[in-house]
Length: 95
Image 1: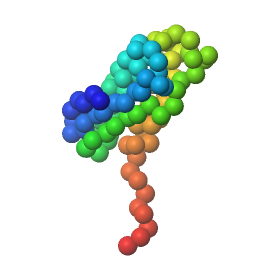
Image 2: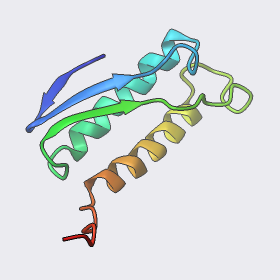
Image 3: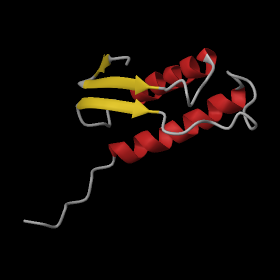
C-alpha cells in the first residue's frame, strides 16, 4: 500500500496482480490514482482514502500495458469516482 499525505488526506492504493498482471499496468494505474488524488484533495474530506482496483481491465481492449487508451480509460473512471467521493452524502433521514 502506498501512502502519501495530501492536504489532510492519506492515500492508499491497492492494485492486485490478479487484476493487472503486468507491472507496467499496475504502475500506470497507481500513478493515475496519485495524480488525480492530488488534483482532488482540496475537495475531499480530510482522512484516510483507499483506492482499490476491483475488476480487471480487458486485455483484449487494452493490449498494451501502458497504452494511451488505457491511460485515458483509467483517468476517466478515477475522475468520476473521486468526483462522487467529493460530493457530500445526503442526510440519512433518521434522527
